[in-house]
Structure formats: structure tokens, C-alpha cells
Image 1: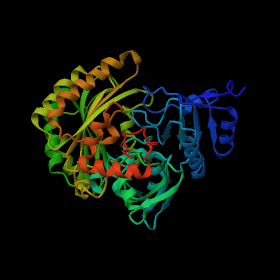
Image 2: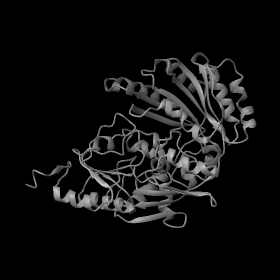
Image 3: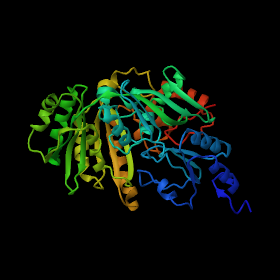
Image 4: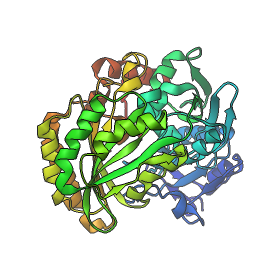
Length: 464
């Protein structure tokens, strides 16, 4: 009878009584493939990901996470962890294992006097900014509101405020983490400082982060938005963008884009913000505004939360995604020419190219202070394959890969782990951290997760 009621996991079978006992141990709920809400719970931002966990534990609190980790370990289940569900490779969903879903753990508590905030692991940047901006405060966060704070922070954390206040992980004060042994640890500069070093850039390799504490900064209305140009002017504007960003103060962070507008027009654009006096921001944008006719000038004073919603127009949920990226220590004329000349052959309207401006405060954090590497990069180039139809998978992925291979000679060899695909391989992960940091991360992985229970990530493979 137990055989007939078992649930296949790929490695062994769970009888119904075992699942019922696990379900009864949680304050949240456990979803099976036949349950209402299961299909919605396993969906994430990337529509290419169609994996079916055996069980989904929708945790209501830390005790549920501990119970779920213990259950997965004891039952030898493959384990995935979903925060915001924005992992492009889809690491947050597993096939035939247990998915820990933190999406109901979304508490945010701001201490305005101390300018700090504590937020749970299922919080999105939309949740986070809504609470902190009520006090005129913010920290570097993702550029899309639906991105989870957990994955972004653990991988480093690029965003509109990074040049002024550093990466998201540079603003991290502590992390509550459930280890592979089901222990709750608080990692900070004072407690488990070696683990705290690894959590600032080392990804989800070391456990389930149930809450984060950050320092906040005063962020009022910003000068932000987009400038949109005809594609025929892209090379000229790209070079002006390079000149402006080369001389820019920390308060200015700009992204250059080649994208397709809703009416089907291919265009060049500059997106970003100036987090300082509005008049000074207007002056700094002068060369980009005064260079000639624009299709649209959408820059102006706006709340920081409004800025965070702009990129969502180019990143609708449920689209199929395949990305490639690489850091650059310079933006050469040849690199500009390559990207502009190749973009017109883009195979799908939502597929676009983006160059992020780096430098500023994030480059002044000591190279050894966190697990994040390549802080000397001045730009980060991202080729974002995005489309709707599965029949287009091969054609668009091939286009992204071909352009990426052509661009590689202009990159510095480094990579941002949050943009890396699941097919990147161990060599690419090593490149992302560099040899010395990777070996240090391996030593910590051996200590905190020697069986590689937390392996659905840009994996640091243990040697223990």
C-alpha cells in the first residue's frame, strides 16, 4: 500500500505518512503536484524553467525552514530555495526534490533612528523600497521591483545606487542563515565573520538566508529616467555615454541600452539616475541631451520607487530568458562598433543589450573584504536573450552565444555570478571569483556544507 501511495523523488520514494508528518511539522503548507496552487508556486520569472519539485514547502517562518532543511537532508532530497524567483538559470526550482519557498516570509522592519533595516528572505525589492522610502531611506537594490533581496544580495548586488553606496552586499550588516545541519547562525563582522565574508558574494552555497540586516542611506527624489535615440545615432551616443560616465561623480549611475520599443522601433537609450542635487544632475546630463534630436526625453525628478519600476517595461514576467555577461575595464571604440552593428540582427523584440556603469564607491571596497571580485571593472556588458515561443529557443540562444563570443576579447575575463547561466560550468565560476577567493570559498564550503546540499546555485564544489 505504501508503494502505491509513494511520491517519486528520483532517488528514493516518500511514503504518504512521511509526507503527512512533515506537513504537520510546519506552520506553513506543503504542496504536492496534485494540489491546487502547485503549478503557480513553481513558476518563476524565467519562462524557460519548467521543473516539477516533488514537494514545495511554503515556509511561514524560521522554524519551517529548519524543519524543511532537516527533512531534505534526512530524506536525501535534492533541495532548491526560492526567494524572489528571479534566478535566470532557475536555481530556485528543482526537479524531483524539495523546494523551500520563502515567498510568504516578507516582513520588513525599519529602524529609522539607526538607519538600518531587517528584512526576511522572501522580501522583494518592491517590498523593501516601499517600507524604507516611507522614511526617506534606501540602500542599493535591484533595478526591477520583483527581484528578491536574497539572491541579489548573496551574489553581490548591482543597482542604481551602487556607485554612491556600494553593492548591496557592501551594505549588509548581518545575515540569519540555516545551515545544512539545520542550525541557525547569525553571520556578521562580529559573529562567524568568515561565513559573513563568504555570504557577501558567494551566493546560496552556504545555507538558507532567512533574514538580512542592512544599513540605509538618505535617498530622496532622484533625477532619473530614460533618454531614447534613433538607432542610427547609437555609435555617437554610445561614445558620449562613455565620455560622461568616465568623468561622472559617484552620484551618477547610467546604463546604455540597445532595445526594441513597443512599436517595433529599434533604438538606443540611456537609463539611470543622479542621486544628488537635481540641478547638478541636469548639468551632468547636458552632453547626452544636447547632442541632437531624441525620440524621447523621459528624465526628470521622481521618487526612487518610480525609478525602480522603469526597467520592468523591458523585462515582463514569464518570458523565456538566456543571458551572457562580462566585466570590462574599458569601453573601446571597437567594442562599441561591434555591439551597435550586431544589434539590428536581434532575433526577438524583447532581446536587448545593456552596458552597466560600474566604478565609484563599489570600486573602493577592499578586494579582500568580500567574496565579490573584479571591483576594478568600469562597465558590465549583458546580452539579454528574451522571447516568448519555445520554438525560438535554439535560434535566440545561438544568437546570444555568438555575440558573446565576439565580445569576449573586449572583456576583462571576470563575471558577475548573478548573471551567469546554469551552463556556465565550474571554470566560469572560478573565473568569477578568481583563484585565491575560490579556494577560500571551497574551504568554507567544506566546513559549512561538505555534502554540497546547497548545490543549485553557481556552485562552489566542496572537496571534503
